[in-house]
Image (tube, rainbow, N blue to C red; front, side, top):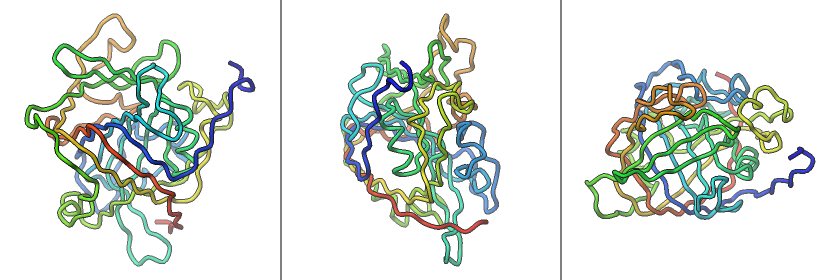
Amino acid sequence: MPADARPPLPVAPAPWHLNGQAWIFILRDQPFSETPIPLPEGNYAPLEKGSEGDLSHRFHGGTGLFLVIRYTSTPVGNYDEMHAPLSSFDMIVPGLFSFKPKGSQKKAYHWAITRLYVSLDESVCNGRPNWNIPKHRADFTFTKLKDGSELLTVQHPVPGATPFFRCRLQHSRMTPFSFPISTLWLETALAKRLVTRGYEINLIQPPCPAADGDDDPRIKPEGQRAEALKQGTGYRVVLHPAWGWARVGKILPAPPFKGEPGADKDWSGFGDGVSFPRFRPLMSRLNVHLLTFDMLVPEPTILEMEDE
């Protein structure tokens, strides 16, 4: 469809009230370092890499997160382009980044989302200016396997694209029942000791660059819609209070497959190191599957940062 014939994307300002289910996996690929360390390849899309929104020079390792979320209710729709009953996204929070707000006497360490894929252009075009979350579009496929696990495959939204991420998601027998859970535990002294000294719960998102147009070489190979890739300004502090019911979950390597795009790739790990960083969960079999959750993403607080 020509760009001028496409329907305009809706504007949905914060706050957002969201419902759905989620898989949350703890990462510990690199120990925390007082001095910055190299950020693994694939953490930034070509559009963000090298821009003001690239925090590579502030990466300190430590505890990170990988999330797969399937929404049943959002302000921009509850569907995706694969006709599943849910909208989907996956994202990487590789670890801790250092920030020093203007007027502060010392720097603190916060999480930041570096790469995130969603199944809706409507989510992309609002997540970037609302919260500086660097969203990009992708196609998600969830397939039930005979062993009870679910195969997740993610690829760029272009015909014949090779998958860049595959994994299996499965419940653990450790919890045949569900239990209540809340993100409030991240604010406890115990959680802060487990993550690292100086850690603060907030996400701090740097500015997002915008695409120049549908022929922008930074987005064209990935099949992105330039209208959705809007600019986000300032440093934005984002809180995600959430609560729900959970079980213990597992992330496992995807089974080998033949005769399809990507069959020649090594799927023994997670991520291809280009379109998504390769990572290793701290524990593959002891993570969280939120069966249901209720989450509020409020308006962000905007901060001025000092150069480091």
